[in-house]
Length: 168
Image (tube, rainbow, N blue to C red; front, side, top):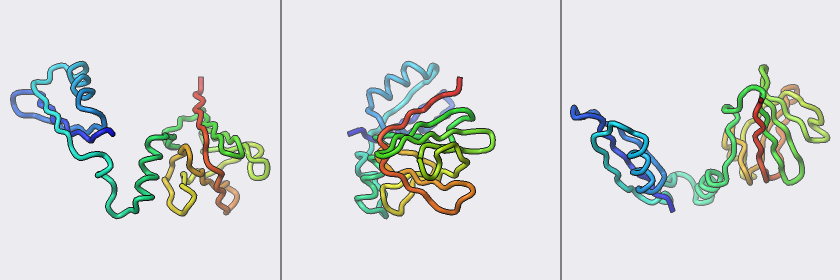
């Protein structure tokens, strides 16, 4: 399991330093610092607690497990999608296409709700309950969205694959 590391970088002899946090092993951090940060006078790497111990104390084990799982399986944050780019989201039952246009997001793929591209709001993804990871489209999660001219919320079957198609 990866550990959380605190890295203190001293840039000059006047004592200017900067703290960086990494979730990798100490050897990787040392290699990156040696390779990419020219002019560093000194640095130290301190291994902190195991990642499992960094779980949120006010959330249940199930929710903490789901958060860790979503970080491992991956996904895409909608706000990072650039105009002209498309996310193909394959759920258990449907292939959706989410496109970022100048005037907002458009979704298509569902035979009943959006057979053709229609403007939408992507709320985020859930694990099947009421907790929402806002603005995130995640593998093994359920996409939650609404159509702009409709007040209902649509929740998909679990997402199996996400493909990002970049504008040329």
